[in-house]
Image (cartoon, rainbow, N blue to C red; front, top):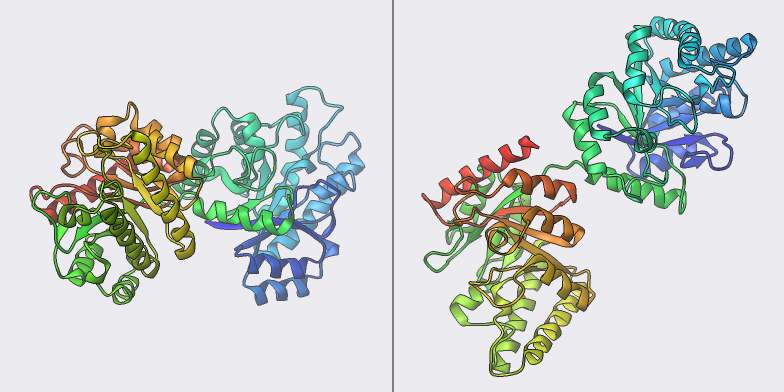
Length: 542
């Protein structure tokens, strides 16, 4: 799938293109912004010097995905359903010229508003009959030229008929020309379709072009439309064309392009799966892979098909951070997080210890781990190292200790460009921050984007009324995610609904690692492989 956006040589105010003016310079701007394609909106083809355009496209390694024809209607009043036969004839001639242009550019031709409102035709049958007659001629010409025409689904407020994907599919079937395809636009779909996802899946191979804009016609990601679901649906039908932003240039063209393209490219990405590893660990710890040879572990993890590792260390000096990062880069394997709980098991370090010296030492250890995380380009887990609330002092004292430590860690995270992911842990292992909501409340109180929520299905199974709903409440505050079944064996050993978990993670466009942290049963490597295999199946279910 390719991503791009609409430009125009000239356009009226509030026309949904992102740049107007010099198309050759705008092709360069698009390429520099990371677009694969541009969609070129023109009143007439003669406005373009084809030789110069082709040179600009070649120089900037970018393609024209589609020719937009709506300006011929908006600016010149040409349409295929006008009551004046002479106007209809001019509209067809203009479309023939656009088709010739598209042939040279290997682009599709959009048939949107140029089909016309046909105010003189008050019923669908009359409209469809006239449009079929005129469009049939244009489609016949396009077939000879082997150029695809795409008939756009447009909402009822802009055109009176053919407002849904199903209606346009039926019309295309009536024309019966292999060079006439369907064109979807999320802005219009958001108004007309009962389910945008169903519309995409049911349209399948009918689809020849896709426009995207959010519900307000701003760039994707600026409103309420779930583009993760949109992109996933397009991937599911194996759509290979361009996904083109046709939206308003707000707050300005550069920001709309940058943010819109970023949002689209991050949408639909598959979940990344990882595994917890340790150099050493107490017996019975939920780490599938425990091996002093970190490089052999990296080899196994990569060969098993994982995307990332979570590295549990007692002290950051246990590894050569730069060498490990270089080796992981060589293997195309991410390091998602550094686990810090060993400092509790072996040294008793926590942020809530009643001994101030231990609290200071715990805080420093976490900062040392954050130094390593900056080298490894990963985050740091804060789970059991936060400690438990005691009874020696009033609750407010422990609360202040924790809040003060969180503020220091957040500030250090800003300095090091490292996030701290705070794990919600069940009531049998700690006496604070059991649930997603409690961790969210703490993060809100501290007020730093460097603090994120870390959820674990094993703990959630004990504490959350609805684990999937908890994931959705966290949204983009979710920074890390552990998976194990209800008995802490690998996923598929118990009753947790991992299909629903994966669905919720996809819905919030979770981009970090989904990491297996489970017991070594029947052994660690088998647990890792079987758990990963099952998680992939659960993604496929969705």
